[in-house]
Length: 165
Length: 348
Image 1 (spheres, rainbow over the protein chains, first blue to last red):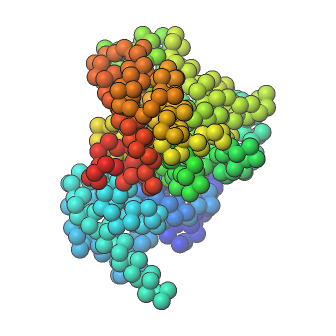
Image 2: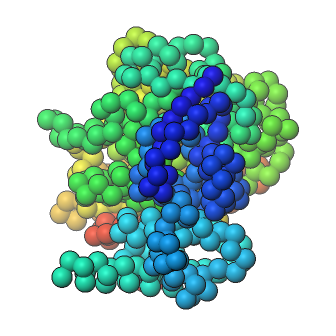
Image 3: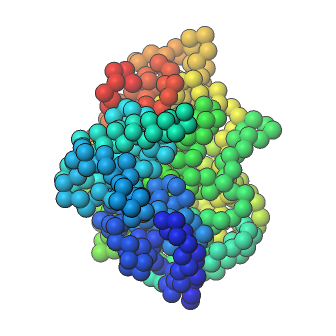
């Protein structure tokens, strides 16, 4: 059976014909739309490497059926920088060595963008760690990740305040 | 994953009709179901996608003071709803102690109630499991079972119900609204999940085409808002299921406990209401000796189902801890590590 769905991916409207309802958002992005920045780690919602934003909220794309997300707006790691200018979260991960091998990094960055948007953690490192617990880093770069989240959040808040001033 | 027919009905009546076909299953966000389908544990021939059903994503205060929560409200949205968190802070803490931020953003209220056990033998298609294959036997009985049930289990199944959310809900007399072939009906949450007995494959009181449309918290449940805590021991501080947990609620008036509500998680195939302990506490003054007595009553019928006798002692200590923290007062804001007995902040 054919299911046709419309998605806006990184700001670009796409019509996607699905020949199989079993395709997850993760497999759709990686295998059919050539957006391989989103990583497949565990494929069962335990590692967070596949984190993307759907309608602005971070979710595990491995546990989301594409066919169920008709009409949704998707943001992946490929869509966060402006040309050569990195997203503040990307810049903060580099500044604080928030990674080693890099495999979990796209998921960590998308999760951080979601976390800052949610606004629940504030500048408390313990709340940041708790709110990032859905993203595993097998290299153990957690200390740098926490610093990167805090700095990115501070920078984004400052920029926002400058703009509204 | 076995292939399936995908349908997305426009309203609840069409959804119930679509799910009446043999082999059909409802799909909400799918955070548990898709994992089960990938492993071949669940093999629905039809998925009835309920995520777009109109009107099921609202939180509303009814005239009688109860709060009605649509089945499609996402776990994160409910936990962060200001009125909800103020009225039922223990439920909010339990929600935030479960899963990860990504999963809470996706998982729904109805889906949380209907999630399956995390028993590893249930998930492993090569293991014998009476839940997956009635009559096959239970490999957990002689396997790695330190996390399995200590209350209400049978020789047929020793799995536990994994939900944190359901633990304070069952203590607060939550009610589930169900739409089925016979129309609308309701059920106390306590009667939704079944103990395994001889039929561990029958986990709930629902028929396959029954759809949970809402959850209701009675007005009286708000009277516990000032003195409540959810405490959960995990094998790591965050993003893990409960080894054991306890939701403690006290209504303290003039220094006396007028009424207590207590339930435990991680100990049985259902969220476990501890009524005998509640009765012991009612009318007493808050006191740790009394709390130990109540904890003993809560676990009086417990017996190990394997290498898990430690859970009986641990559960009693967690009950005492939850009651003690509840007495001190509900924190103004959910703690940084929700449900955790550990914190870098003293006294939290």
